[in-house]
Length: 509
Image (tube, rainbow, N blue to C red):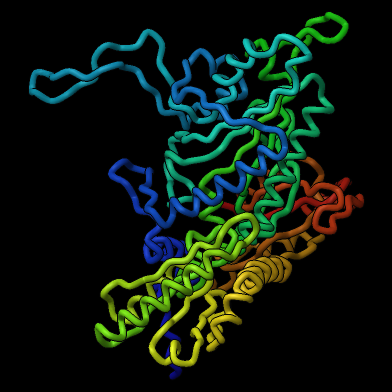
């Protein structure tokens, strides 16, 4: 009987994927559950990832003409009620503030006092409160387009939560823009979808499909919702970002009007778009393995960790001096627009324990430096994505470190694309579709299927049937040309009725 290879993370992905995901987060010391149900504490390693995501995206937003602002956390209930579809879509997720202070009750315990004249909703999204400001800021066509982004937290009272993927409170950015006409607003919607897709692939190394949501899946109150969808290692889809063309719906409810060039008053066209800390969950489930996290170099909190090895005080001084000078040389190198992030780990821990702590954190490159390496003028390098290890001349390593990091970045993207391709199938038969999404005997419920490209007749009834019988949703209607997609007419996989093109079906988070 052969023994299973020992892994740092137990259970493994194959044994229990949901629990493996939580154990990766714990082993990498990224986040933990808070005393408030459904909320999380993001620890320094996890927050450093969010800071790098935030910094990169913020630069991309500003390159496309957007500026940052901040709007209130609290939204008057009456604001949400102005847009009927919007309030219906978020009503069950709202956290509501009804009192303004606390006072001691008869038993000495604090109780809410001073009821508010109007309840306040803790921000689930900001279209309505931002619309109130936009109605004052926009008066003339000369004020347009208005391109605003906000970095904030939001609250959606989720019943089933999971760290990073779905929590009651999470961090995100939400863009809100105002335009004079539909064409400009739609161009903005697609421009930001492209920004998200570029970020996901070039920085998260997470391949995505761009597409339009079906009517039943679009953002409440929007005319059209577009998304990027990624495949995780359990073959489920993760909606990783959305961009909404809101038409004039929110402009009418918030009275965002402007005087056009002919002197006529017109309602504006608006958009909104956002990504959140869910991207970190997507990164984990795209790249991590059974030894822990693997971080794409472009977002890594540390690119290189140097592990000094010595036996006594004399060795220590010599080794640390070598490590410090090496760190200085590496820090001078640039990956994109940023200097390399390099740290020396001189904690008083056993060598194996120290090494495994960085394996589990997913640092792209580890370097061991001991007296023998110093004598040879070399370093011992380990690559996290492939596990490859080699002794390299010090000057050669410094000269090639950027290329090594880019090779890791490229490999992670290529590996994720290959995985998605392997688990995507064009399906034209209902029986084949059901087999694709039905666990076989002995399979884990989450380990089967993947993406299915199928014809659909546009019927909400078919969507509902798929959701009820297979727990499968239409993730998106791919954009023309996206992912080699060709909108060729065919027959609906469920009904045999005419279809104008294929959609992406998957189980999803």
